[in-house]
Length: 601
Image (tube, rainbow, N blue to C red; front, top):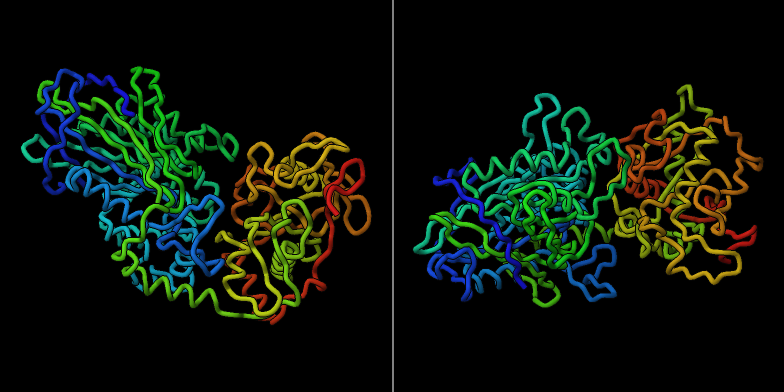
C-alpha cells in the first residue's frame, strides 16, 4: 500500500546532470490512479520504478558449489541473479522498460566458489578475463552498484579491475583516498528517465558503505582508503544531488537498519540506514543491505521534516528483488514525489533467464570442475554439524593446520619458543569432510571466508578474557533445566562466525553462569594457566583487525602475517600429507558444563 510522503519541496528550475548522468529509452507515461496528491492533474502525474538487489555474494545460478547440487534450504528459497534477471524482465515488461531503473547494493564479488576461483585461482586482474558478476550484471542492464564490505576482501587491484569492467558506476560516497582525502569512488549518479510527452525525471542514486571495512580488511585498505560516517556523508551529498537536479533521491546504503555495530566505537556506526533516513532531509527511499534481512516495505520518519522515508531490503544471494514504485506529480512545473511504496519479489517463483545462464555457463562449469577435484583422502567422516556446542575433529583440523603454520613461521625468530594456541569459528554447520576422497569443494565448504592467517601474542590473562567474551554465544541455562541445541547458541544475536573455540589449552564453559564468569578450569600443559605466560595465538585477519570486537586481539603484537588464505593452507596441507587422520590431531580440550557436569555427551 502506498503512503503519501507530503513532500512539498520545490525543485530547481534547471535540471543539471552530473558526470555519470545517462538517459533511458523512451516509454509511455504511467498515469497515477484517480485522486493524485499535490494538486497535480492526471496528465502531469507519472510513475517510475527502481528495482534493487543486495548481498548477491557471487550467486549467478541457483547452485550450491559446496553440495554440488541445486541450492536448497528449509524455506524453499532459490538464489542467483539469473533468476533475478527474469523478475527484472517481468517488471520492465509490466511498468515499461523506460520507466525503470535497476541498482545493486554491494557485496557482489565474494561468497561463492565461482567468485573465489576468479579472484584466486584465475584472478581477473591478472588474466584480463571478464569477471562473471560483471558480465552478468552488464547484460542485465544495471544502472549502478554500491561498494559492500566484501568488495575489499581480495585486495584493491582486483576490485579496481572489476570496477573497470562494469558498464555502470561503482558507488561509494563515504570512501576516500587516504592520501588526498578525495573521492576514491564515484559518490553518486543521476539517471535521466525520459517518459513520452513528459519533462524528463532525474533520479539521483547515492552509494554509501558500512565503515567496518577499515577493520575487516585492514591489510587491504590501510593507508590507502578511509571510511567516513555514512550519515555525515549523506548530509553532504544529498543537497548536492538536489542542486544538480535530482527529482528523486534514492540512497543505496550497504548498511543494515538496526543501528548496531559489530565493532566498538572507534569507527562510525555499522548499520546506519535508519539513522540516515531519520537525520538527512531530502531522501525519498533507502535500499538497505549488509544485514541479510528481508524488509518488503518500511517507513522511517525524518526528524527534521516529518516526511516518511521508504526503506526496503531484499534478502541476500538473489533470493529477493526489491521493487520501489514512485508516483510523481508536477508542482509549479517541477517533479515532486507524491507517494512511494515497495514490495519484494521472490526468485523461487521464476525460472532462470537463459541469457544470463548462457553468459555464465563456461565460468560456472570451470568452477564446478575445479572444486570437485580430489586432492587427498580422509580416514573417517568429520562433520561440523555439532561444532558450535561440542569439540569436534573437523574444527581441530583447522586449528591444527593454523597452529603448525604459525609455529613454522616463528622458526628462527626471537619468539620461536612461544607455545602456539589457535582459534577457529564454526563457519558452516553443513560442512563435512567425508571418509575417502576429499575435494577442494570439501575444504571450501569447511572454511567459507577468504581470511588470511595471523599470529599474535597474548598472555594467559588475555586468553581467559577472550574465551569469556566468546562464551557469551551460549544461552544461560540453569542446572537441571532442559537443553535444546536449537536455542542453546546464538545468544543475543551472536552469529556462529563470532564464536571462537581454542586449541592448545583446556577449559570448560559453564553455561549456568552469567556472561563473563563461564570459563572454568582453564589450563595449559596440565596446570592452571599462568596469567603472565606469553602465547602465540593463530587467528585470521578478520579477528585480528577487530572483527567481532573480541578483547585484546586487535591490539596484540603481531608475530605472523601471511597473505595465504587459511582455506588454501588446508588444501596445501592435504596435498602435502595425502591423508587427514583425526587420530593425529583431535583432542577434546573443551566442553560445555553445568556445575561441573557435561551438558552434551
